[in-house]
Image: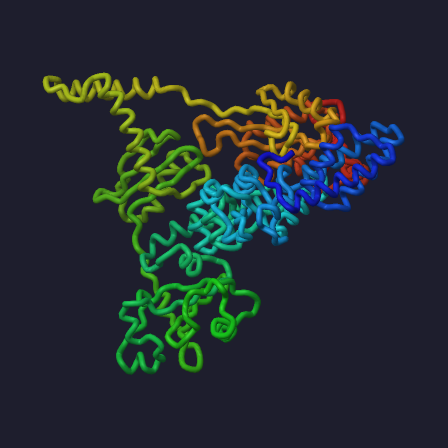
Length: 634
């Protein structure tokens, strides 16, 4: 029976109905064992539908009367599968009603399952015994709530629709590479207009529709890798223009997406003297329209043939729910970015007047820059002598540095020349200069602490030259004798219940073959197969807690789904993870195999003969390093 079960009128009514159905069968000399009766009652309490209970009892009675023990087990297995397909297999809708929540818009959960689904990006509600649900809950709200929880029925239906057989053909559909971002950055980028997605196991990304989903949601999100790079570039580009007040505004004025923005006069600014006044009034009173008098109050997509008149009508008659300004009025400014050109338009009494001066941004000279190149770092800053620059390794230790004495070129040009001269030709990601310097200072403190521990903080009788030489020798000694970096590694796991590991057996090991044997044992056991067993990998990185202990189910049924890593590009690009998938494939040679997207693309040429096409459609390919054929789903 379900743990800590709340029983009431609804549950009692179902128990009486179930007992009546069992008694009716027994009057026909059908004898159910105690174990079968318990499973029938559990099914009734959790499923909560009289028709399904009646059918189960009737079918079991028929199987018992025919001494069909295998048929009885099959029926009970099907019943257990129905229970496992519930959102939370420990609670049904009858208990929710007995709890006091009688609306039919929620599917019930207990706290443990609520936290699991919240972590995966689902909206969870704290349900009250008075029938209330309030706004959807944050992790802290879930932990503090002592009652039951719910997920919207519509969302649960969507989850079930997406929880299809992993071998469906749409699984191989193209998905843009995604990057994982933390909650704080997700909020910042959402406010700037970026498309943020929840991290789920759906076959397609799940879009965040409102800010509160992030505020009260899990700790991590995802977004297009290309879009993330674009916004990070904008973030650095906007540093050149102090007039740009936010990343959202940078996206409007410096971006290449079709957008429009609405500016309205800022409270307590000189612009209040001409607020709601037309251009004639402003000019006749010798006033000037200045960008610093305005604030950006809305940014939206410039779709189709949307015109200025369309925007005016919309923001007076049918304003968007997320618009927080006043109705579009005289003295407001509408900025249009058609992807190629940005123009500003003053809302006049009866028309719009283009206002080119509004967009005259004064570029500010940058004095500092930082780059991440591979796993190393580069910093440069403007000085009186030219440009002071430094190269750092992956642990923020100084490799080389100096002063570049040429102040006639920009800091970007100086950085470009220095990086090329050093041979740092990999991908360059702009970073935060101040944050990099903080990391460098932290490493310096570690080194100096070791020096002071060994030699003492102060030696008044030592010659300066001798002390400096000793310190340099000590630095070398500290750096050369620091604890070795712990390397990432993989574990393999097999779980009787993929969705909730604690509901069945679970084993893990660094030996893929050992875990593959355990997984096959789980699959062969009819008493546990209904739980939906799985096998997968656990990525461990002792040096990085953010990526440490990431778990991915790779094997379901009789198929190795390497392509599941296509949606989590950081892990999918790791050689260690790819090697682990191959080891699983080798440990289960008779299983179907779905490799990652780039592996599949490499298997087949762009142009194929008829015979090659037939072979591909048949799902068969020959491994390059083996004489045996393997099955592969494309």
